[in-house]
Image (cartoon, rainbow, N blue to C red; front, side, top):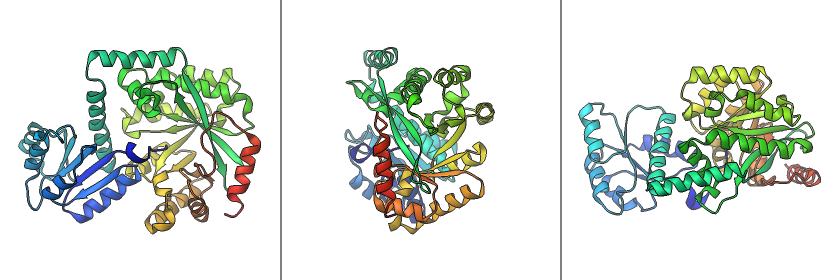
Length: 395
């Protein structure tokens, strides 16, 4: 999955004076695309908070001020009251949780906690903020719904394709299909569109439309390559199997060449049911990839449970890996695990020659990223052949 850059990345203020905790959390959150600022005291928190801050992670025990008091002050301040706050605390007493919520905290998580649970809660409270800010009235809500319906009914999406290159042969292994909506609203952003579709109950229709348009577009242009399709667990859990299978049958696409990339693992509502459905898809020939591996503990759990044919290494682990021995160690571990278990490893987000050379040295099987080829609605075989040869020639 490709995270937004620059000002669009979510900004987190982490307020905790435990250096070991802040260093670990900062590193893990940054691998998921967040911009993290650390404050080790209440005073530092007030100095570093910005109007553009998207979320505050706030410990209760700080050297100069009580975390509850800091929460209250943030929520009383006109410039910071809009920022969601998650309290992180070892205090498990119900009165502490109640006090935090009454003071305006949006959530309360007791230590120790699972990293993936924290990320899921972070995304939930920030999603609430998005909905509060951008769907403030029933009129605005109806406007969003109308726009989503228009996009689906008029099929206002264009499929883009980004190639994935095998390292050993320098040939194209497959194409990841990406949806680009046509809209003059906030929903022109694919991430916003799919989040809104989930919120208003249009996700399955939108995803199936995106898949169908991509398959119709690419069917006559494939030469045995794999097609990678992003797949939220909601779709696998839903009763859409026959409709999904027909999309490929009608376009003469062998499902053995289809790889479903499981994204947003935190949205799995029932893991037992999800894995049963996943097994049903696999029995019919579909393959699976686990996306963003290395970005958190849960992705390793997903590998164990899903037993994927493909693992995609998180782009934030790949970026500037030659400058970070810790990143190298993570990728080396993932690659070794994949080789031992017959799983294809793909390094995402290759944006420089240094990144490409680094992952090749560490033994990845395939690569994908802007340095090699940007997503495009067209598939130019000659251009891809030239790109592959040029990119790998001195690697």
